[in-house]
Image (tube, chains in turn yellow, brown):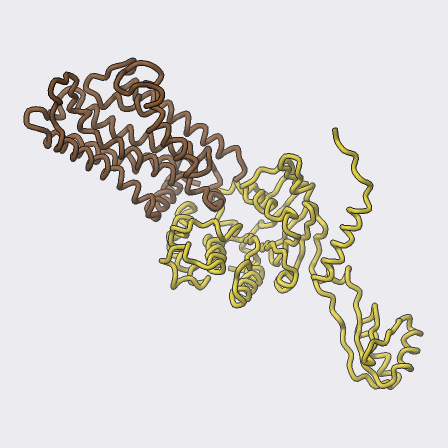
Length: 317
Length: 248
């Protein structure tokens, strides 16, 4: 199917709030997830990611606010599995059923053709164990089954909660490729994770939560660039001359042990031409790219500072 | 979202779990098997007794068959809550009333089918196996009523159990309430051999009035069945309320 075929499939979360007793799991959360890209849903454990996803799927009731898919509440979808596929918890499938019967039961409820069961089992690499009881599956196989279940209705929106939990390296690559290809097909893909490097490998866009609040909702590269200053690492035979030159251009090169130089706030495009113009031999020149992990830690450090610098709240009676 | 589709799903769930197929088949095996055994071994009035009831004799196995029906109802509903599996089910069928209704319909329907088989075999086989002259026919007073009543009884207790499992969100939770309710409480609350008193209104005592040719006590055969049905309606309504109201 091509990208236009999916129609309205935006996920819209508006002013969402969920309180359990006095704990606020989700706090005035607003964000949107667009089709055609993979959105990483990041945050430490307990940040409210799973709660948000459960509300989105109509499993939990929000204290206030709305969570809509294509403008509608999940509970109002006529055959939801045909529109939204979700993996919440790979351990939830009943261990005494076979993988095939588990999927057959799901398919029947949404009048999904039986042949889809064999198709998704094949796609998830579970065709050979379809008749085995789920309790004999490893966590990785259960994740694959959960993803197979999410794909059953060929949905335009795919929501996966920590899909790479327990997956072997091959499975992780498979999931990553799958998510990317689902997005390429124009589907809306929302994937939660608490693993940074993992998320960096598949996400185009990020929604970051901390303590139930929205910390960031930006394209992944922007997120990194805005938080991590670029840095260039270089080696040259004429360090002193280059240093003077760069100081004149407003950079501040610092010599490291072993004769290597680093220049904060610069990119290779800044340094290379200058050195070439002056005929300074460059032995090595490389950008040190910021990682999602660094950017995320930078963000959470800000948050921690913010949290600890707040005046202590007055105790409620 | 259609009711037939939800029914189909629930039926697939029942037939794909060994524990459900096993407990469902145990209903007729235990009910009819033990009834026939008792009728064959002891099918005559004790010397000097005046209250020999050939119909009740035919349903001795119901004591055990009812347990299988309770277990079936508890697993069919309560099994959904194991490891939060209910989330998968409700994501597929978000209309909780539809989900719950389909579940109860499949539980009740399956038990009705095996219950009728159990009931017919228990009665016809039991009467045939009794000592000559004591067995009665299906046209005799109270006989047909008991055949239908036994199946209805099994259906109602399985649904009662399912309702409790939905409320308590657990198989063991449901069983730890229902087993005492059916097996212990009747003996604690009142002398089983005598009619009258609160014990008559316990679900098992009330529901089994229909198995007697001439039921003693306050409740008649159908009013007794109505009391059991009221218990079932109460349990399933509370289970429905809990399912609708709570986060999954």
